[in-house]
Image 1 (tube, rainbow, N blue to C red):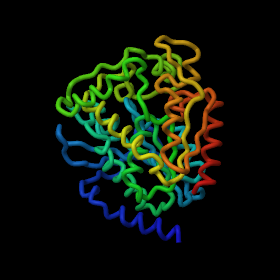
Image 2: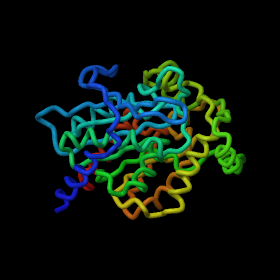
Image 3: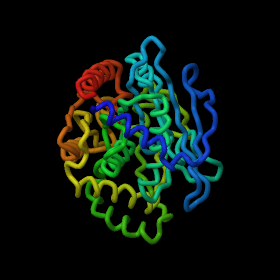
Image 4: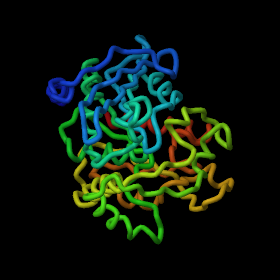
Length: 337
């Protein structure tokens, strides 16, 4: 009966109007062999034409199962985590990711990267990817989000409880601000964002987190630095309002996500502005206490997991930490299909 219900829900999603826009053919992706991308026309918004990009890597025929995962990246980010995708396909999952509108592969000439006035703007991008996955007869879909992508994923599931998703993995989700003594300004800026959404708001100058990842500095990763910038760019008052309203909705509607949720975060936050060795094993972006405090209220089936030595993006931590994370994630998924 449960599988039949999943199929019915998936069929409903297949008919969603969100795919009334055109999609390109599958094209080779810059990540190399086994990776393909497809652009999806998402129509127009307040600043013109927008598109999303679906990226996929399919499990080999001998390993394929009924399972798939959809990954949502964070702010100042895009999907480049090839190792993560390879780990999922090796376990029989078809791996999908979406570069949201105005991010990564989806950026169009003249667009301001990362701009948003409501996180609901990203829902059609997720819908399009879910429809693509259900076309492949994958009734067991895991939604996985990192940082702002974790917030978007949780907000999406709160607003779309009937989506064809059977469980969710949140990797350091952005559930609260980490601004210290100036955090009281967030509601003020959010209110301004309702009338002056394009007002620029500067970000902090620290590059500690970027240094912990980038192979040019102290990290081990190579990525497109035009899509994942060393210095975090200015945001807008409209973007602040979009984040604040989504966080507020999750706080005001506790226990509203009914599917199993794996909530993962580092054991420690790094609060320094200059480089220290601790930044290579701690979350240099968010307050992990906030992630736990709010995360456990998302729903009745939340499994909180503290990761010792974890960076903000846990799947980009040191090799030993990553290995332990992958082992735990796949055990958890096997128990929560």
